Image 1: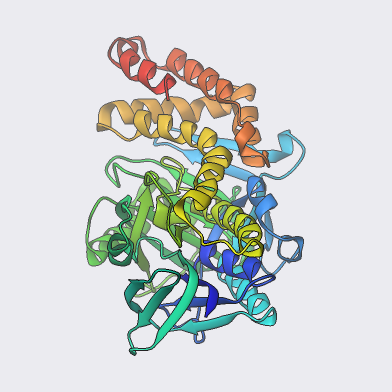
Image 2 (image 1 turned 90 degrees about the horizontal axis):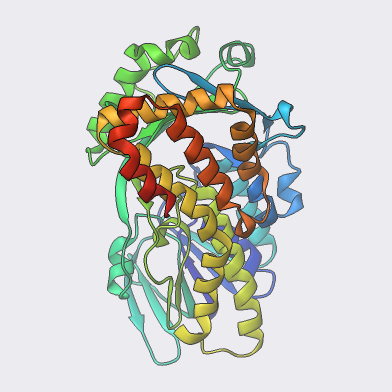
Length: 421
């Protein structure tokens, strides 16, 4: 019997497995064939992620090949730039996340952890004092506690155990490789977050600039993977707002793309008797900014810390005991989430007002140093439970002041509601 079985080897599952294998017998199961290849991923890794990552990884230049120095919140009218050089230290780092996952898995194995890749779990059976999981080969494994870290791919299993599932939208991304000299010439920033209602009403189009490669994609509505891919190709070929960034970069229209569900909005409970849910499977992705890495790492760290003491005390891992996990996730993350919820309410709506608001917001970044400072501090604050929502309200007030008078007349009820989040 295992102390913990983890289903899903994304950022939350691998981080949790690595941390718990220091003190517990842990099995990590993943549906993809990670023994052959972990999909290439390039992400921003804000400084507020640092408390949840061991220094051996944080200081590894192969995982984090460049600092995150400048972001671009781009609208149709403005490049809303925030440079960390104005405030003295980087916003964080850019990660080649597949390398982080591989090194977490390697350390997990070194500490005695067991992996089973290219396997699907088809059945979960609850027993009085343990849980049994059955894979697609008919093999069964038992555990004292089961951890669901499947993102949006494991919703049937999640439902079978009585958990809610978060609302989910389809997203797509691809990595394009290019010479460093071209990337340095084309991109003054490492991250671009661009809203355009015609691309999606639910999320951004983005660039993450790694070393020798860029990741690009968008969060869609509820299109099929072929439809998402077709639109992404059209955007990269024809969308004039991004063509300066693509200058001189050669890419194949047959390039591999990854599409899948992206969750948002937390479910009401992350634990039941002998089961917990981590990261995106629990809807722990910030509603507006879609920071899945932060929430995956944070929930994994919180769970691994709590379960160490429970395991030492021969816990039965009851819902009452595990509620401490739910409470700590809420304490660490949900104050920060309020900003994302308010922004989602303001910016993801009918096209006319969302365009007006996003143009005004991106221009504020260029014209108001205090706005830049507050956004910078949200990126570098390593204790997000202390996130100051008064700063968010102040930025909201500046945004309302910046929009045209005619827009103020129609949008003031929306701002009042956003301020209450």
